Length: 316
Image (cartoon, rainbow, N blue to C red; front, side):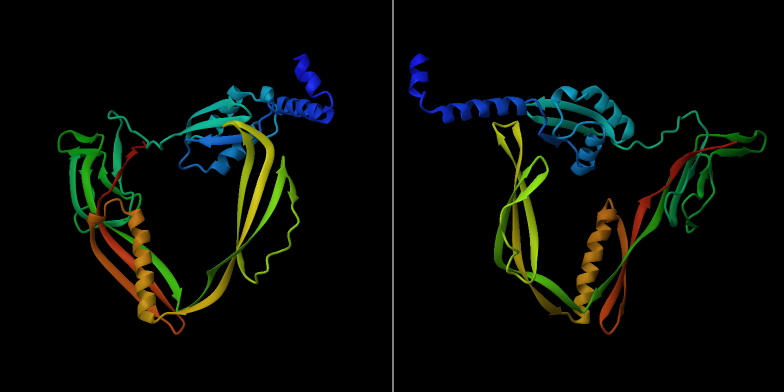
């Protein structure tokens, strides 16, 4: 050590800088500088970050002040769609692990009396009551809330006897989507030209490096942010920002009425198929359209064969 110290004796600035850097790293290591959310699918990361901040976990807070159990309990109380929450501290990184709760339908006990009511608008094609009284027949049009199988039985000698309704109801259900498309569309097309601007953020304090606005009349903007870190979980309160300006040029595309109807019909059909669980259950497709001088309107209707009905408790 004496030989090493003697070697760097004349390099005081280097030695002081090294000690200062080590001190800064030690001080910064006591704070949370990044929050990473894992496991979420239906709930957005931004939504969870906001919830964490409201409950006390945010960047810049001392790790000792993070009350993990309280934050976890408060989050679960505030969100019924969170089945489990875990918080793990690694370096200056807070890793929040999420397990989302699956929505559970209301379950009615077998010993409880109930009806089967319609949960969709449709036309009955088949109804079989295993227990209870059928109140509709094939060909009937039903709407939401209509009783399909009543939770009671009528006997000549026993009178009215209440039961837990059971049965199978099949119906034709209609799904529809409407849309409008102009025959002349002005779109921004990328030219392939781009310019970049850079900035640094120090714990949310933005410093933009000198850069004039792009030399493009029309452009799209893409912002990419990346936090400074060493190793895998040691983040610093420094964030580098790269802003990319992509030049675009306005182009006008003219469509014929037939082309517009075809494009819009296919788009509406794709949207409808996202709502239908089984495409093979589609029994009929209807397309209606109106063509105007500058645009077309299209409506696509799918007739789908489905099992309908949900249980509803009897209220006396």
